[in-house]
Length: 169
Image 1 (cartoon, helix red, strand yellow):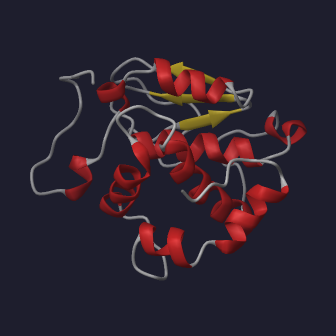
Image 2 (cartoon, helix red, strand yellow):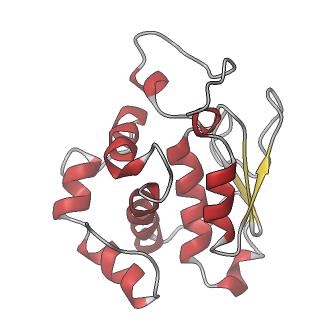
């Protein structure tokens, strides 16, 4: 585990407890993204993140590159990378900031980010789902875990049909 003093901490805000890239480093996430034909570009502290839909510390995407800073939440990095991973490679190059308006692709992206969290040391799906809830992701069953375990069959099938990671164990 890497410590990073630049990570923003705001007492009383549940979102302040989410795991940030500065805590796990960039090497493992970069290697994970590389397996899917993506690059991870580190952005300097205080600089705007290119391609960030939400701004602030949220990850950004342009083409096959995911942009992030040390203070970027791990869930945000995995979510934005997931958007690119679920797209056919020929569509990725056209992406700038907003990857999709498809509910099916958004669901698959949320599911995939949870599955991919197991491939990052010191993260895992349990931590990622807790961070998603703390950040304010909204699922009709009330939590990321309930959605993932009870209501995400369509997302799992979307990923399975495309040969993408979809394991539930």
